[in-house]
Image 1 (cartoon, rainbow, N blue to C red):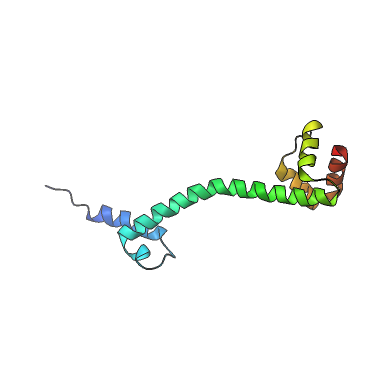
Image 2 (cartoon, rainbow, N blue to C red):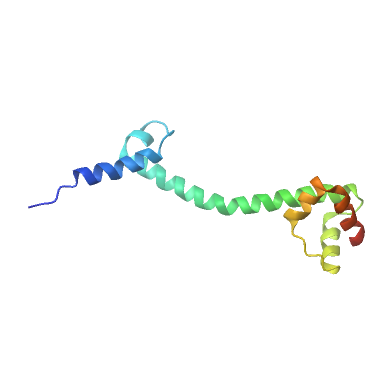
Length: 113
């Protein structure tokens, strides 16, 4: 006797279609197109998780550059000074300090100058 895949296939297709909620046209209704759309969306999600890290680093650097320029030094000299003085604070923390604790950030910039 052969095994019929009706119920299993229906459930599998239903899961894929649930993931395509909000998609337009055949990408939502047709299983084949929906499956393609879900796979492509997964690829984009994977790539963009990596891109997110680059984007945020660029944001922190831009913020730091603006903050240190106000204090009379450019970004590259600031980073070089940090390395020379063995101050190991990452860019994220430095940009947060520049925004929320400007007095502390001023002291760091003064120690680098």
